[in-house]
Image (cartoon, rainbow, N blue to C red):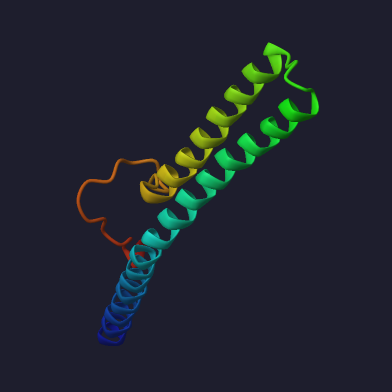
Length: 113
């Protein structure tokens, strides 16, 4: 009985370790794609904002309210910072249990589950 439990535990540990390795590999493969997507999205946001403000300046025949320009610059900065924050959260995730991660993270002990 104890021998079977030890075999099951070893199989469980190997399965969990293999799943974690697969997840980390997949996550590493997706990071460059996320970076490219986020970079393009940032450019789309900035260029879209320029187009909207350009249309507003053309429509108002140059008599633009300074508050509109302040709002435009502020919203562009906030949007780009938001995109950077989202990327940083994905690239450097916080551990689920609240502890700091240093080096490689160990899998949980299945006997404690």
